[in-house]
Amino acid sequence: MSRGALYRDEAVVLRTYKLGEADRIVVLLTRARGKVRAVAKGVRKTKSKFGSRLEPTSHIAVQLYEGRELDIVTQAETIDQFRGVRDDLDRIARASAMLETADQLAQEGEVNPRLYTMLVGALRTLDGSSSPLVLPAFFWKVLALEGYRPEVDVCVQCGDDGPLVAFDMESGGTLCRTCRRGTAVSPEAVVLLQQILGGRLNEALAAPMSQATHEVDHLATRTVEHHLERRLRSVSVLDQH
Ligand SMILES: [Zn+2]
Image 1: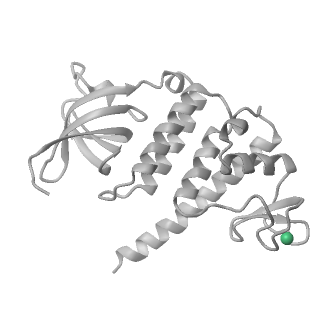
Image 2 (image 1 turned 180 degrees about the horizontal axis):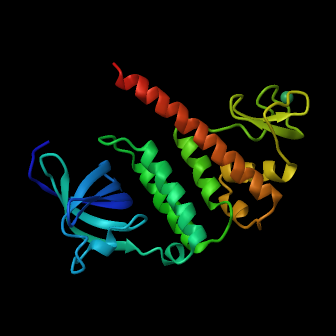
Image 3 (image 1 turned 135 degrees about the vertical axis):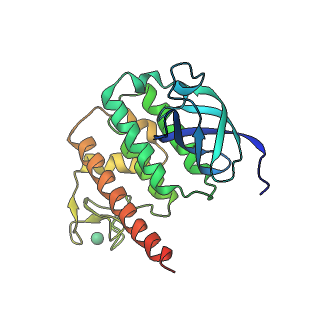
């Protein structure tokens, strides 16, 4: 790739950290180039023209200059404000969990437009919905993107269609009474899982907070953590070679 070229992309700001007196490093998930770390110069000065557009969760159209080590942000225009997220501490926490997960999954130099599209879609949904299932649904969809889509329509062990009473991530999904192992799940939680993974997300998002939404949230969080840990381990093994 030639150095010193300007390029444009769309991005979500995953995180930022300080650099020197006035600059900031921004970690972006871009549509066309995957994860990019870039320098935003002077953004910590009060007169900065785009500092406020470069906060975590910002969805921006961005122009960058290819630097020798890090690219440099030269322009940033807001695409989505996500005011509904920024004004609500609970939604900020959920958005942060989405950003952190995307950050851990995305590798620099690895293009992943579907992860980008999923993250933007999930932030937009979160912006307009107070459903307790927005974050867990994002987790399940990201897991499916990573190649881990659990079976939730039948018993993963014997193929029986129910009743399904347990979920076990090592086995790969839901289990019937005979094969049960892992975590016990209620029939209502199984229905929510079937809706989320079966392309009926809107039905799941319409469900009010309940014991079942709590179960689905808990399972999603544990499964994504388990997956990320295993992935981190395999990446660190690869790095040793
Ligand atoms: Zn079974």
